[in-house]
Amino acid sequence: MWLARLCRYGPLVLAFLLLALAVRSLAPSGTLGVADEAVANARRHLEVIAREPHPSGSQANASVRTYLRGQLAALDLDVDVDTWSRGALELTNLAVRFPGTDATGALLVLAHYDSVSRGPGAADDGSGCVAILELARALSDAPPLRQDVILLLTDGEEQGLYGAFRFRDAHPWMQDVRAVINLEAMGGAGPLVCFQMSRDNADLVGAWADAPQPVGSSFAEVVYSLMPNDSDLSVFLGEVPGMNFALVGGCSVYHQPYDVPGKVEDRALRHEIATLTSCVRTLASGEWREDAPSRNWFVWPFLGTLEWSESPPEWGVLSILGLLLVLDAPGARGRRVLAILRGILTAALTAVAVALPAFAIGFGFLFTRSGLKGPTSYGEVHAMLALQGAWALALAVGVGAWSGRSPRRAGLVLEASLGALLVASLAGVYYHVQGLGLRGSDGLPLRAAVTAAAVAFVLAQRTKGSLRWLVLVPLVYVALTFAPFVSILPQIGSQLEWLAAAMGAALFACFTLLVSPLLVEHAAGDPAGGDAPRPVEDAAPAD
Ligand SMILES: [Zn+2]
Image 1 (cartoon, rainbow, N blue to C red):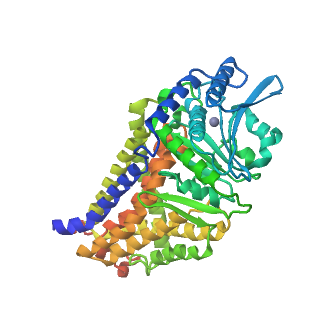
Image 2 (cartoon, rainbow, N blue to C red):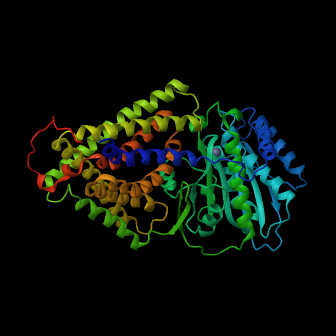
Image 3 (tube, rainbow, N blue to C red):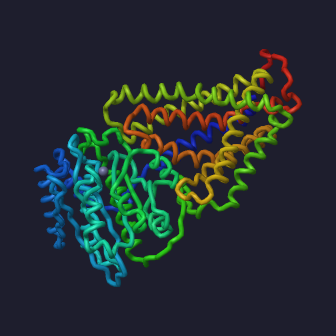
C-alpha cells in the first residue's frame, strides 16, 4: 500500500522539490568572475552617491556630480561635461569615450545619477552609476576593444528623461552610437534582470546569453509594458538597438526615503558588474549589423538560455497538440458541453480557493517580517514563496486523498482539472494565432508547459503502479518553466509586498491546478461515467 502511495504522490512531491531548487538556483551565486575588490569599490562609491537625496538642480546633485567626475578623472579619462538649462533648471550630463582599435561605431552604456527628492536613490540609480564606474576601471585596465565604448551618466531622468533626450538630440557622439545598454533599478536585491530589448536584437541577446548566469525572459517585456514606468532607454528605441537591465528585487524601496546603500545587496552589485562587463566586452568586440533579426529569449534553471525567432508558425502545433490531448483525455471524452462548462467553473472556483489562503499566508509572512512599508529582501520573497509552495503542495496532496475516497469526488477533481487545462490550451492556441509576429510577447515556453501538463495528465490517467513515475518527465519540464516566473514575477510586479504575495498565490494556484489531476485514481476517470450521476461511495478507501 505504501508503495502505491509512493507511486501516486512521489512524482508530485519531486516536482515541487525540483521547483523549489530551480527557483533557488536562479539566484546568482559564486564570484561570477568579479573580484571582491570591484564589489568593495562599488559599495564605497555607493555610500558617497546615496548619502542623501540628490534630485536635479540641488546642491547634493552637484556634489554627486563632482564626485563622479573626480572618479572618472582619476582613471585618466577625459570627462565630457555637457551643461544646459531647461527652464529654471540647470542640468549636466557626464560622458567618457574609450576609443576602439578598429571602430565602426560606438556602444553607449548609460545610467542616471539624479535621484527623486524623496529618497537618496541608492538602488535607483546609484547601483547603475557605480556599475558604470567599475566598468570604466575595468576598461581602463584592459587593452582597448575593437569598437568605441561611451559611458554616459545622465541628469534629469526622474523629471522627464531630460539627460537622455539631451544626449540623443544634441551630442555629437550620438551619430556614432550603434547599440545602447541602459541600467535601471527598482530595488537593490536579486539578479540584474534583462527586461526589455529593441526588435533588432539578435546580437544583443547573443551577448547577454554569454554573460555569467543571465537572468530574464522576453516575457518580462509583457509585464513591463503593463507598468506605468519609463526609462532612459525609451529615448533611444527606434533609433538604435538597445537593451534594458534592472535590479528588481526588494522593490519596495523604489523612490522611497529608505532606498539607502544598506538595501543594496553585495551579490546584486556583483551580478550587475558581471553582466554589464561581459555584455560590453562581447558587443564591443564584434561587428555592428544593420538589420539583425528579432529574437525571443528565455532562461531555464540548470539548462541555460533558449533563443528563438518570432513566433514560428510550426510551434503552433504544440498548442494544438495540448488541446487535442486535453479533449481526448480519459476523463473528457464523451462528456457533454455542460460538464465541460461545469469543469471550467469549478476550476475557476478552485483557483480562488487555492489563491486566497496562499495570499493570506504570503501577506501574513511579509507583514510580520517587515510591516506595511518596510523593505523586502530577495531572501524574504523566496521564503514567502516557499511557504506558499508548501501550502499548494499540501493542498494538492489533500485533494488527492479526498478525491480518492469516492469516484464522484474524483470525477469532480477531474472535471475541474480538465477545465483548467482546456482554458490554458485554448488560450495557447488563440494566442498563437493572434500573437504571430509579436516578438516581445511570445510566451512559447509557457505554452509548451501547458502541453507538458496535458501530457502528464494523460500519462497519469493511463499508467498504474511504478509506470506512474513516467509522469515525472513532463512534470520536470513544467516545474523548470514555472521556476523563472515564480522567481521573478512577484518582484517585478510591484513595489508593494501584498501584490507580491498575490502574484505568488496566483502562480501557485495555476501550478496546483495543473498538477492535481495526477493524484486522481485511474478508475475515476472512466469515460463511461460521463455526465451520468455517480453513486456516492464515501466509505470506499482508494488504496
Ligand atoms: Zn531610475
